[in-house]
Amino acid sequence: MKVKISALFAILFFVAVAASAQTAATGTAAQTVKIQSPPVTDKVLPAAEHYEGGQAALYAFINKEMVYPPMAKRNRISGQCIVSFTLQEDGSTANHKIIKNVGGGCGEEALRLVKLLQFKAPGYSLNTSLPINFKL
Image (tube, rainbow, N blue to C red; front, side):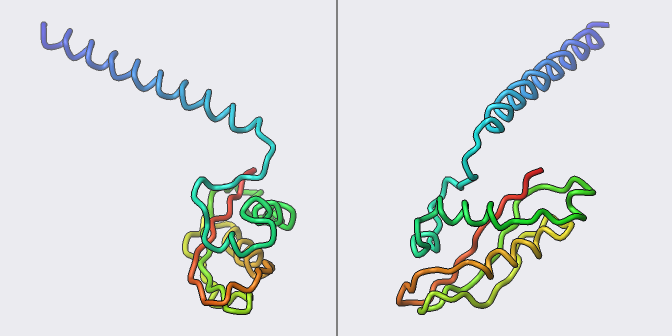
């Protein structure tokens, strides 16, 4: 009998901890939705220092040019795609490759966006990757 009561209290404890974790995560997510600035990662991207206007301008251009893929809209797919590319000495990009794809055409759209980017000439080649966020 004591074992059953102890097990019941243990289960109730874990349920309470899980419920409090979910409410804490929901509160922080609601606060981040209210911010209207373009999503910029916390990490400084090496390619962003060669973009006219810096990292914020880079993500502003991506947000302006991004067309959400219809398949991803229909299936409510969102997430982050990562595209790898080589920044050439003259500022052009080459060797485009999708590293992380969330599906629904998001990876192909991220690849199209990276091919549109115009960088300043760094004077040396740079292998880098760029995360692009897709949010519905």
